[in-house]
Structures are given as C-alpha cells and as structure tokens.
Length: 348
Image (cartoon, rainbow, N blue to C red; front, side, top):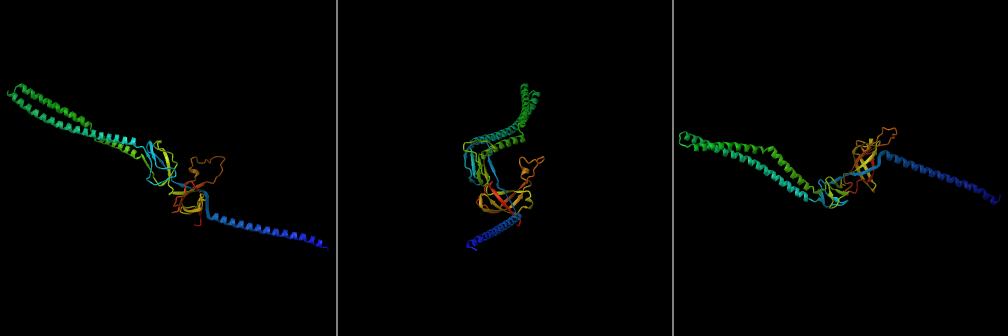
C-alpha cells in the first residue's frame, strides 16, 4: 500500500473524531446552561414564594397649601422655591395699613357705644332724681296750699294769695306727672340685654379687625420645604388664594400598590425593604402601617363601571401604607413622588 493511500484513509477518521468531540462539548455546555437556568429559576421561584414584591410604589407626604385669610397687597415675601423653613417662620407680609385704620374705627365705635349706654343710664338716674325733687316741691306746695286755704277761710289771707298757692300746687302736680313721663321714656331707652348685645357686637367687630391685622403676617405651620410658589411682592391677593405649598420631608411614607392577590399575606407590622430608583445603591427599611379599605380604583373620581357587556377582568391594586423605620432618612433625601421597589419578606 502506498504512503499516499494511508494518509487518505486517516483523514476521515480524524474528521469523525473531531465532530464527535464537538458534539460532546456542545451537549456538556447545554447541560451546564440548563442546570444553571434551572438553579437560577429555582432560586428565583423560591425568592418570589418567600417575598411579596411590587414596583408600583411611591414616596408620599403631607402637603400644606398656604393661602391668605384676608384680601390685601403683598408687602414682602420671605421665601423662595425649595427653601427649607421651620414652624413659625414668617413667610409673607401683607400691607397692614388698611387694617390698622379699621382697628381704630372699630375701637372708636366701641367707645362711642359704651358712652352712649352710660348716657342712657345717667338719663334714667337724672329722671329719678328730678322726680324726687318735683315730689318734694309738690309736698311743700300742698302744705302751703292748706295753710293759705285755712288763712283765707279765716279772712287772714286775701284771695290772691290763696289763688297763688293753688296755682303753685297745680304746677307742682303737673311737674311730677311730666317728670314721671320723662322717666318712662328714659327707661324705655335702656335695656340690659340689648345694651350688652350692642357692646358684644362692637367688641366682636374690633376683635375681628385685630385678627385681620394679625393675618397680615403669614407663618409656616410646620417644618418643610417651599414648593409651587406663585406670588411676588406687590401682588394683589384674595382671601383663600393659594400662595405656595409646604412639604414636610421629616414625615414621609411609602404608598405601595400591591395586587389584590398579594394582599392576603400582608399584615400591619410586617417588615418591608425599600429600594428607591433615585438611590440604587441605598436600601431603606420600614414596616407596614396599614392597608387601605378598598382598591385604588374604588376611590377614584370616576370609578370603573363593570356592568357592561364588554367587561374584561383587570387585577386590582390595593394601596398599602409603609412607614420608614426610625433614623432611616435623617438627611431627608427622599422626595415626594419618587418611585420605589418594595420587598416584604414572608419569613419574618
């Protein structure tokens, strides 16, 4: 057999050996991939079965809308957007000039009302004193009339003196009647209940004007950050007009919207791990505070109408309130509206 013949016979055997090795290698790699995938799938399934997860979660917080309680012109604005403020800090000053004038007018009106009531009571006392004086004069004129009559009958007094004594007596009687009528009129002008009501009304008007003056200074109701500022110095504002809002970042929470088939396993007090999209390298811990009494759709402005022929079942979500554990956000880096991932371990 020639040498070239031997080489030709060896080449097919070599090819067959190479193909067989490649098949074995491919099978091994495939088995490794399947094993790795199965292992990963098992651990992922185990992870899902021991944790309840949702990425439909957001940072929530209180929102204080600051508005004016009076009409007026803005004299000075002490804050700007995103500025931190403390409870009690002055935020806005409204020009107080008009309200200072109103205070003086109402204070004067209250004093006038008090003086008028005093004058009426003084008129009653004066009328009573006048009656006493008139009655004393009537008594004297009666004595003088009796004396003149006796002397006239004894022919000691002339008729002129008797007539004068009679006239004086009649005048005294008329004066007493007139003074008694004056007393009735004075007393008619006096009513304790009515007078007290007048004083209360005038005092209330004064107090209201003083309150309006106090409202010219607007203060922060809580610690937080200014947002949605919409006024500048010189603006004319109306009662109830929103000026800006304050968000207290020291009191935020997470609202996680879990699927309705997940909520059965959730209970208040359960631990929750919080991942915030803005800070992927940070994790926060918290706990479930409460579970809403209905789905989010049930309390929407336009709740879904399912009594139609084209109904399609949609898995509902139920909001769950999650509170951060103590000292989890000391620097208040969480902002309202941030997206979160929530993991609730079932093993704890």
